[in-house]
Length: 442
Image 1 (tube, rainbow, N blue to C red):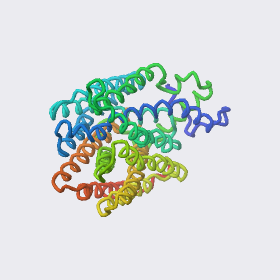
Image 2 (image 1 turned 90 degrees about the vertical axis):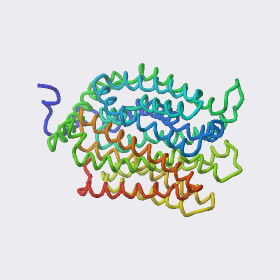
Image 3 (image 1 turned 180 degrees about the vertical axis):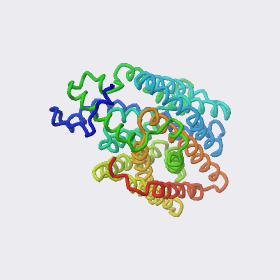
Image 4 (image 1 turned 45 degrees about the horizontal axis):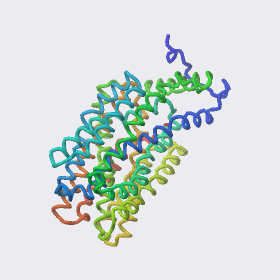
């Protein structure tokens, strides 16, 4: 009989075996989250630095807004193709080897973005970059479920995901300065941007290979009692989920609830990547701003989002409520984008972008507590990957491309952002519809 099969029907009592549960969770978080946080910063920068490169690259290469939007979005088509296989491989070989592989390959391809010379090479390299990165984000989400019980999951995920807006907070001003390196060693500023921001990914990938631990029972930095209790607690929660329903791989890909959540996440991805890949150009459209000024102004919404999403998810964990936290974050996102479509003053537009960013990043971070409530094992690996692959693939392609297309057709960002304001409303309605019974136990 396996360790998991021999567990009692009650949750393991940490105090009974001399384990301080909160201290253990802090220890695990402090050991892993700093590295994962920095890795996600590198990941997000390599994914969205094209939005800053476009400030001068589009002019140098003659790209229209439509061409840029298509190239920015084609990245996510590759995501759609690669994420489910990637998570299945990680489930088999472990997080340490697979996350390291992902980071090293995406870093190399991100640096090769400096060789873009026209539309075709732009599309090809963005596609390859997406395929190389496929599996990183859902892989980390899966990895966190191997370490943290459900009661801690929203705040842990939000602390990890805070790296995304924080990456833009620090990356926006830096990108603005790097773009001024135009002409050094015969390279354009946007070429230096791709090269310099690719190096950390490769270095971090090597470090992950040395530092990361796959499972709690392998962690020598935990006391034996801590390792045993944490493994038993996570196994107990997995058993409890599987008592209700044990999902197969096919169910994780085809069940109506999973399909509904995938559609809901598509709306979230449309807003998140529409925001991330176009904010610098929305700010640049104010006129008479240097690339450095654009960088600092574009960082403001993400500074607000970094703080907002952490507080949002702490409240979700404190109340043990998921459904309304996800839906209200979606509606807040819609309000922010709607403000961008009707307001004209630059200060008010930046304020609306701040509201949209808080809502958008709170939405994508709190959302992941929903599938985590009923998926486990290989089904979790497939389910997380499928939701992120399809949602990010379709939403990440549609958001940037539709904005670019409408920007070219109308000459204005106001009408271009209108569909982005509608998408999160649909997300909220889906979430409230398919999770009628509030998820208060996770």
